[in-house]
Length: 258
Length: 245
Ligand SMILES: Nc1ncnc2c1ncn2[C@@H]1O[C@H](COP(=O)(O)OP(=O)(O)O)[C@@H](O)[C@H]1O
Ligand SMILES: [Mg+2]
Image (cartoon, rainbow over all chains, first blue to last red; front, top):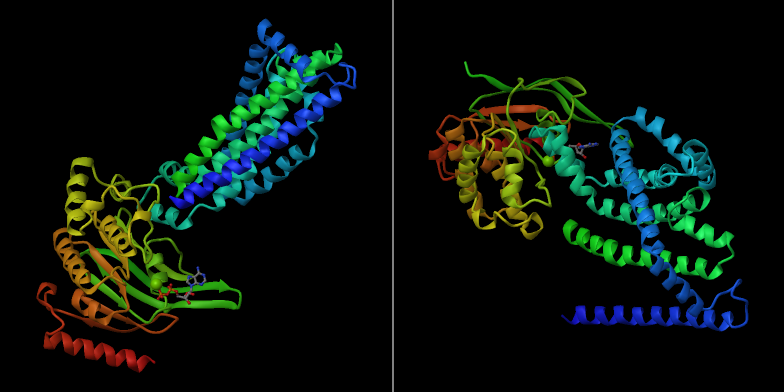
């Protein structure tokens, strides 16, 4: 009891300090904005107005939904493939020797290059280019995380399953997967934020919808207050994702693996 | 002639370590038939667990063969319990039962064994809520619950209190006469060996070789350590073990 109270107190303190820091940043922004042209640094007020306009015309919701669905799509593809590749390569030196360098190569090539290639290959009109980039950027992260997760699997339990004649499938679903759940959650956390950034980037470079595209339009139309409004939206989405989804998920996983 | 369920033929096992090769089993041959209880008795570190692991086909011998006829249903109570932490006691048992037994039958056996191992009140507990001794009992219960042809047990009663040991020994014997599995039991307790086994195999120090084999004929249900015959066997074994030092 005493421990939980003092822990809560500690958390409250952290929250207070964090909020104070953000308020300082906000104050600086307001203060600085007074000295600059809105084209260079729009004030919080102007940004708020732009945000409201975006909300009213409906482009806020529709663009966020488009970007989110691309993120989820590319991210789940990457998580699934990363898991499959990790399981596949774990057992055999052949597959490991084959897959590892390819993934390293994928990782070394900068995202810009992938985006340019995706636009050349898939055009800019549809979902393929952003989803492709999200996939490409998130896949190595997912693979590495699952691969090391497999290391943490208790070989003794796998031996037990072998003695008692569990099928390969049963061993994977009943031993590998549960043991990987904590890793899965951390992979999802890292993967989603990677994927979200990749989505914005890809939309910025080559797409006709989504938050990234809206940002790029605002930018080329010199509507700096709109750019700022979109940035606020980006931050808000990530915060909701972190505290609405990932934090509860992590808490779950921690309770579960204990 | 009873069926052979496990056979070691000229088995040698070596491990490659940092300081060269460690020989753990040396040219050992042993045959275990259906219904037999065979105790492997030897000092700690002599290679007993390694022998069981080869019997369970988890390790391959360096030389020789370990033959377990196809279709032999093997259960293994490991030296340290190997339970799935995310499954309850009952789910852990079902996890292996489902591979062999249809459910109404599996459920009956599970019920009987949970009661006899005094685990029925803990069937819904997770392993991390159990004491070490209780986990050991789950390990034993799981092994007994699949109606095995061959049961491998690695010091199954170590560090349990004497009363519980006694109880689990008689449970094991009762299940043995009911199911007629072959039991290969590793122990370093000579008393336990002479109480349970039809054959006591005395192993040398590492690398394990068979030093002597003692056949015990009296029915297990009638054996007590106070029995002069048993005391005689015990003396003989103690003598041999001291001779080995
Ligand atoms: N996988 C392994 N690699 C290297 N050495 C091992 C391995 N398994 C067991 N040993 C060694 O083999 C010897 C016998 O081990 P073990 O069979 O566990 O003995 P026991 O069960 O009789 O106490 C020990 O010295 C142990 O350190
Ligand atoms: Mg051992």
